[in-house]
Length: 321
View: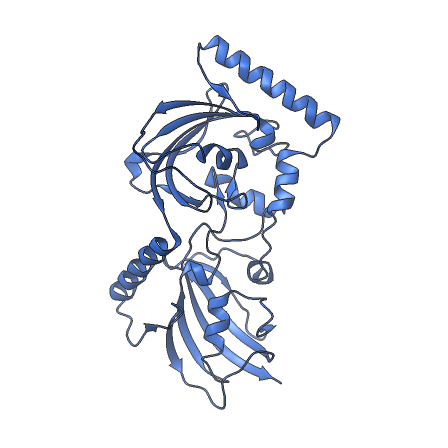
């Protein structure tokens, strides 16, 4: 299986660098950034005029037009989990990315300021209802700012996004969806003797170990392998190089810490962690093709994609008092 190298400390230490990303991607309040916003606005206005498009300007600086309305649909609110399809292009028509309805797998994100890039879409989707399709004209300050990617995204790119909202879910509904996915994974892989704890962690003991289970305040050393449900290895420790942390310091995701406190020294276990015990909404990046580059340039942290279910194989090597 393919191994995608990540830094485990970065993954576990909640390095979600949205503030850094937004500062870089949107630009700071300098004369240059103000001038760029004026340039972007004029370019958008010219594009709308030349193409005889009626669009509404917002205080945030983006423009939008409703392509398909649905007055009966539920309105998108803050913290909703939103499923969408989209197409993103530049002003010259170059396609940047898309996830189309024919795929049957919508893009999902939580409607917060820290869960979606480009941030302009977070502002825009809050105006929409389920079943609606809007076209957004987003200036560079609310898109990718000074960032560029190969020949796909130039610096100070203005983007046009056609966005369709197909579903809104609550946190409880998302948990139910994930429970069904995990149950199917367990059945498909013939996993026995595994069951959810009261908090929703799926725990299977492989080797019992000896002594007492560790408690809050104790330091532990582990060996691990982290995978997605598709079997792809996300990260794994090296023999002789244990990962060390202190229980109760919130330095690791909740599901991993709960699992360790169910184990004994020398024990081994296999666990499945739903997203609410891992990284929850994570970070949705559109288009997905630029995620690895953003991480590599330190513009965002290594958080998994939204609502990722994680699989760990763990050995509790030692417990330190």
